[in-house]
Image (cartoon, rainbow, N blue to C red; front, side, top):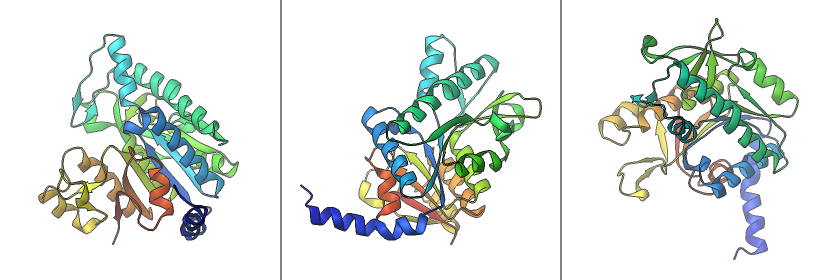
Length: 285
């Protein structure tokens, strides 16, 4: 059991970080097991509310792949992936938008609200927040990539005390909807806001030198080491695009990026407010 003295020490440890990041923008990409497990969901919502109450400005960008898969299966609609991206035809896009903007987004808003947060759920279509273009030259249907972000929409919400919760759906000049990978959206939003931090919640502890050994965590990755870490296998598979997002963010002006384990309760607070932190930090050094 933690004694009152130990609790006080925890608060003292957090104090310099509370001071350092007061008034700063932190983009959180919310996905993985933390969106599926009810207890983990609750703790993520608590973390986001705490960040707001201590003076930070969290911005949440969420995924929703499992919920989309469940709905497509229920409707007996086939889906396929190319290099980790869902090929999105028009009927699939209708399902994606309904699930992400209509269900998942509103569930997150309600969850933060339970802890006293003041939030607004939006999609990238609202206010032309995320302008998109077809991914891979259009060969993926309505799967898109970010062309530009309109930060004024998010800034207005922040200035009025709200936590923006963003569904990763974009639009083009013809108001056509596009399904965009949430990691890519989170990185683009972080750059547009010149955020202090970008935090990616994943289902792994971070970058491991040995995938079978959780103690082999690489706590810091400098972008100059990126190619070498791919060559030695530290960065592989689905982790490659996540690290690429981090590299894009820090080279675009974001202070720090973090890949953390969303399966660990309160991992966001542990990363931001403790000396040791958790996961892997990607830095432009």
